[in-house]
Figure 1 (cartoon, helix red, strand yellow):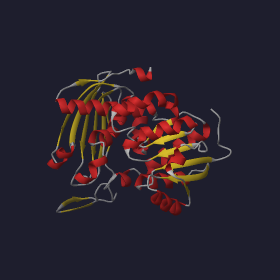
Figure 2 (cartoon, rainbow, N blue to C red; figure 1 turned 180 degrees about the horizontal axis):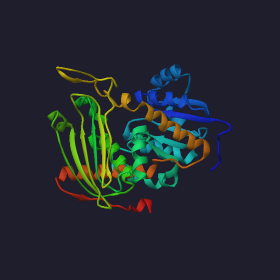
Figure 3 (cartoon, rainbow, N blue to C red; figure 1 turned 45 degrees about the vertical axis):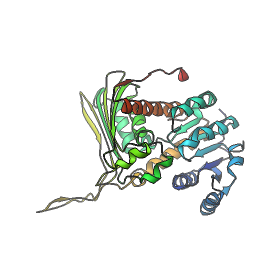
Figure 4 (cartoon, rainbow, N blue to C red; figure 1 turned 135 degrees about the horizontal axis):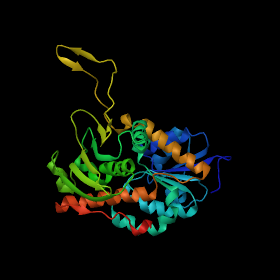
Length: 343
């Protein structure tokens, strides 16, 4: 592919909410940036953020059909992702798309014929792959510190549960929260999932069920080499943003724990006292977001393939769909290891 490194990158950010601001600030730190434009379904919001960031703004329809950009960041609600990707990719730009790829498999499958030729130019926002702690875990797995993984356990729990009213545009616990863990599983195992069972329910707030959502889930999965995986998800804890991983094999175990401070611990007659863990994803993963965005723009500059790419996004959503079907049916389900879309 042709490199654009010498002239600098022209980037368009689609979506100007809180995530848009986060990505916008990362984009502006890239050394090969020429200019940044912003657009949003709400033009006032786009203009306000553009003013704060010192960027330009464009009407949404004009931006999506433009061929002047080297790269787009799609940071809009999940329901809009595939439609916007289909409009953008024919113009030749790279696209960073926040997870999930879409909020249902029907829309994702319908878009795949248009998106598949551009698979290596579409990066999905699975930021945990770029977290330094997770990256070190992956490095040590590849170095065979513990041998072949036999069991993998992932805990992913939010601190504060969402309001029922805020869920009207949500794809739900499995498609928006656990999907990170489904991608993390494929990445850490370097393998596909062949079967799974998901136990879900409304243990936090029974009103979630009235709008079609669960708030708690435990998913048990098996990789093609027999590896056993357990993922626990919840929308609420009493102690902070709980994000832990344990990989176990014949050579020992590797763990990623919750960062908590201070490093100087205080202990007295009342016991051991330490600071709380991170309160949310922003406090836990700010470095991961910056490293992720930088890696994407570096790939655009050099014309390289991106990872995690469209296929990774598709497979994570596919696993989420099968987990949802398992939860609804209350039974073990199989997963297609080799999908015809990616043959």
